[in-house]
Image 1: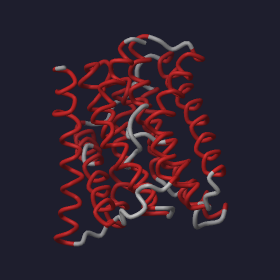
Image 2: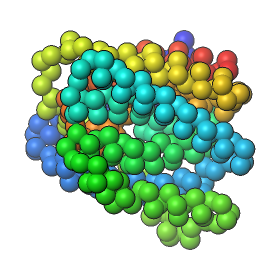
Image 3: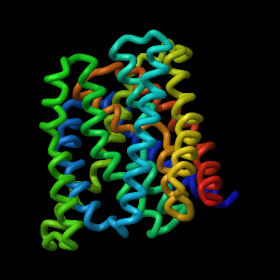
Image 4: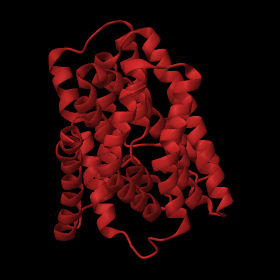
Length: 305
């Protein structure tokens, strides 16, 4: 019971307060969320990648296992989201939103604190490598899914290759592979910027939730998105760990990270590139609220793997 309560107080409550802060500030000052999204996409996220890759990389075997899990899990969740969207007869914007919330969990600004609390610094370093892969996918596959709601295929891929996160991953990966490190001043700057990333995206989410039209909360597409994220994601993660023969502490971390509520980063992408904003915002809100109860359960399951 003490672990359950500490997870709620030390992890879930700060996130909730940050989201509420964004909604409150927008009500008072009417924030420019597009500018906030651009800061997050073009500066803060690349900074996080540049310092997390060299610092969080473990043995080559674990990195390979994390990569294999990420690719398999992402592919299966994308198929689930796309299939559900077509089954419901959603338009292009709705299918894009459903696919994004199905594929991407809140592994960064929610998952990392949960893992640190549950598994300590060793688990945190493994989670950091997983998060870098998720950020890369978010700003490649995620941008593709968001952009296709409003753009053609050529414009979509142009948007992907304009993302500095893609190039930050190449540079950060090279630094990690060569066993190098950043000069102290550069490293401090990267930490300063990268550590601001979770707060900014949570504020954007709060703004979007505050502006959302909450009528239609019972829509079938919303509840399908919630079901996929809260039930489908843990089930698919468990299947991927089983088929890849991943167990022990790494399996625990990957299971918990993949079982996170819908990613707040998807709210950033639909703000910047297009898609069904209300469906994304409501899915993130409901799954995040439900995680107050479910995440401690997922942590317990993870510890048994």
